[in-house]
Image (cartoon, rainbow, N blue to C red; front, side, top):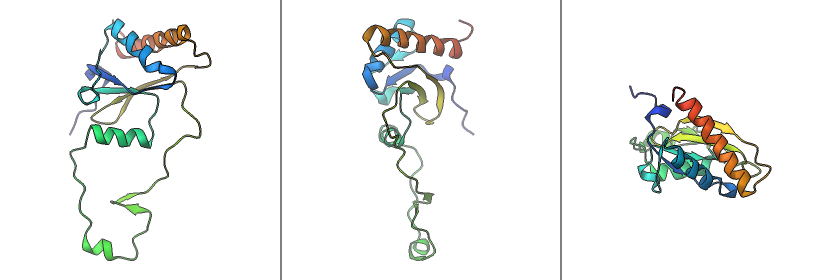
Amino acid sequence: MAQTPSIESVKTVYFWPMRHSLDQYLAEQLSTEGMFQVVVDPKIADAIITERIDAPFLKAMDELFPTAVPAAPPSQESAASPETPSSVEDGLPSRPANRPLGQPAGTVFLVHSASRRVLWSTFIDQKDVLPKNLHRQARSVVGRLKREAFPRE
């Protein structure tokens, strides 16, 4: 059985682009704190920091980090069966596109790249997007992450 990933197992992070360039401010703060190594190639990252965990994000993750389980070819029996509901594709029920009505603002997620598990998340109020405030917000997010991920330091 695979071990559940933890924040402590993360050494390298990649930043998914965020609104108002918050990813740049967060990368600067994380680099300053030295908690994780910030990488510019998502394929070598242990985790991704993003403001979205929706269907397009998952699709991009699947392209960057393909899972080891190959899709099983459909059996002749199930393909010919009229009882198979049209909402089932590849053995999984279909679901609507996971798209919010508006743009996300203020959520930050640390997603383990191999397992796709959210290891940590937080929310910040992004009403004021002036650079000095984005810098302050990034400092706040990194401070929360540091307190929760490395409580003894």
